[in-house]
Structure formats: C-alpha cells, structure tokens
Image 1 (cartoon, rainbow over the protein chains, first blue to last red):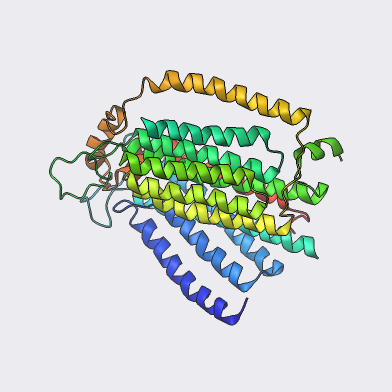
Image 2: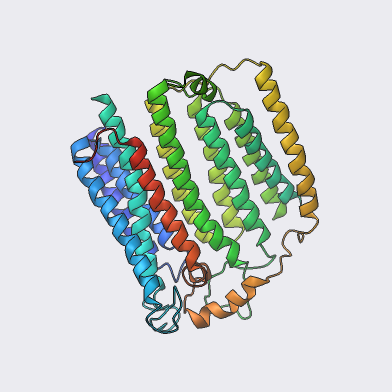
Amino acid sequence: MSIIVKKVAQLIAGLIFLYGIYIIVHGHLTPGGGFAGGALIAGAYILVILANGSDAIKLKKEEVGSSLSESVSILVVLMMAVAGFFIGAKVFFNNYLPTGKMGELISAGAIPLYNIFIGIEVAAALLTIFLALIIYKEEIEE
Amino acid sequence: MIVYILCFILFLVGLYGLITRRNLIKIVISLSIMEFSIFILLVLIGYIDGGIAPIITGLESNPTYVDPLPQAMVLTAIVIGLATTAMLMAIAIRLYRKYRTFDIREIKNLKG
Amino acid sequence: MELTLSILLGFMIIGAIFALHAKDLLSAIIAAGIVGYSLVICFLLLKAPDLAIVQIVVETITLIIMVAVILDSTREELKVKIDRRQIINISLALVFMLVLVFFFIQAISNLNPFGEHTLRMASAYVGETAAKTGSANLVTGILFDFRGYDTLGEATILFTAALGVLTILRIKGRK
C-alpha cells in the first residue's frame, strides 16, 4: 500500500480503538457492551495489519499475545462467576458488588467488569482467527 | 403477518442453497443466510407497537419497552455465527490447498 | 412500519437468490453482504440498537475474512451440468421445503400478530432489572445477570472456535 493509505489507516485506527473502549465502558448505560466493543477493537487491529502488509515473523509474536490474553480473560470471567459462591447469596453469577446509583458510570455492581473482560475475550478471539489466516497465507507462499 | 412469511421464505432460500449447491463457499453463504433469517424472526416476534428501545432513561413516564429477552439471545447468537463462519472458511481454504478445488463431490471422489 | 420491513425483507430475499446463482464467487460474497447490511437497518427499525452495532461490525469482519480466503484461491464458480444426482438433490430440497411449509403454517397460527407481543417472562426482567442490578441498559442487565450462563457458554464457543482455527491452519508446530 502507498504511504498515504498507511498514515490514514494509523490515524483512523486509533480513533476506532478509542470508540471501542468507550462502547465497552459505557455498556451498562448506553447501547453496546462487551460484544460490540470487542469486535470494534479487533477491527482496529485488522485495519492496521491490512494497510501495513503482513510480515509472518512479527505477526507470530502478536498471535502469542492475543491467544494468551484470550485465555486469561475467559479464566477471569469464570473466576468472577465462581466468586459468587463464596460472597453473598451463594449463587453462580451472583452480583455481589454494591449496585450504586443508576445512570452513573460506576454503578451496576459487577456488570461493567464482566463487560470489560468479555470485550477483551471477543477482541482477542477475532484477532487470533484473523492472524491465523494471514500467517497461513504467508507460510504457503514461502 | 406478512413479515413472518417473508422471513420464512428467506430461510427456505438458504435451505435450498444448502442442499443443491456444490461449491463450499456457496454452502457457507447459505448457512449464514439461514442464520440471518432466524435472527430477524426472533427480533420481529419481540416487537411491540409504540414500544421504545429497552434502555431506562427516566424521561418517559410509564414507558412500554420492546421485549429485551430475544435481543439478549440474538446478541450472543450473532457473535457465535461469526465464529462458526470463520471456522468453516478455515476448513474450506485448507481443503482447497489439498485438493485444488471447492467442489464437494470431487473431493469425495478423490479420497486422498 | 410493516410495509417498510416487508420492502427490506424482499430486498434481502433478492440479494440471497443472487448470491446463490452468481457466476463469480466474489460477487456472491458481496451479494451476501446485502443481506447482512439490510439486517442492520431492520434491527434499527425494530428498536434494537445493541444488535445493530454488533451486526454492522461483525458483518464487516466476516466480509474481510471471506474476501481474504477467496482472493487466495479460485474465484470461478464450478460449471455444473444438470445430471441425475442434481435432479435428485433439487427434488429432495423441494420435498424438505414442503414439509417445512406445513409445519410453518401450523406454527404461525399460534403466534400473535406483528406488533402485539405480550411480555410473559420478560415482564419480570423489565420490572426487576433496575432494582436488582442497577443497569440502565436492560439488554446488558439480562445478559450478564439473569442469563449469565448463556454468556459464559458463548465465550467458551468463541474460545473453542479460535483454538479450532489455530489447529486447522497450523502447518509447522509452534516453537
């Protein structure tokens, strides 16, 4: 790709990344949430990779990181769900944190935390799938 | 009532493609068309005339919301649809590398 | 409202039929994109903004993955002659469709007319979400509190799909 495409893609990818974080963090107040924001963040990474061309050795390092963060975040979601057994009403997926005042950013108990970790999980999973496809194409050409 | 029938026709188009096409990519497209028809049917069933989007703002007095339960279920189903489509595409490209064709009947005959 | 939705659904049906009969695989994928993006407008009209945001991003990523696969392999559709197996397949499909139409006619008589849905289970959710979870977005409240198991299962499926793609596409083992 030409240098104009590369520079514009770098500029826009930052904005898309910020918008994805906004969608995730405000998931309990406005439309959106972990699924939409995670897919947006993965889209920002994919845009940068498509614009800058692919280099298999660099991408393999990225892939190790993305699959690691995917595994860790799903483990954290499971841990938070299991923690409901030990705190409060002894129910799986118990919302044990104080709910606060409705409409404020820090409210709704554990829901924003679930949103954040599900968002990381979705973003990392989509990025891993895309990176696996790109690395496969690179390895075939060698 | 006519919207339900149109949804069902969309589902039938996907089913027809799934059975009669021989190209792997076309089969994946037919599966995703069937998925889309089910999503729109579930959300259509939950719609209420004069309802508002299920977000509490505190501005309306005594609001009627559209049914939020089908929306929550479809939200997970959309992301699962993306995962299954990506996995099917991975299988398709791997089969193409091995047999040099997308034709499922030829792949069955080659048995390599 | 119902008329607008009918026009959009008709547009989706035309796009789906074209996607199944296109000669070029790239145009088939783009025609499948018609169906996906029309779905976004339908979700917006049906007062489901959460779904619209998710669907527009997911459809874009699906198109990118499909085009990446197509450009790497052949774009030509197979030349299919109408032989005996093809006729058997088409007649089998028609029989399946007739059976499904029969059950659909049975099922649709039990549905409420469009726009007159009665809240049964969801009325409890709508009433209690604000008090129990404090979430202003009812969909998020249901997704992560009352229906937490579904979300956990969805995350597990996504994790398994990523592992499956890695397993299928890996030629050399990871050092």
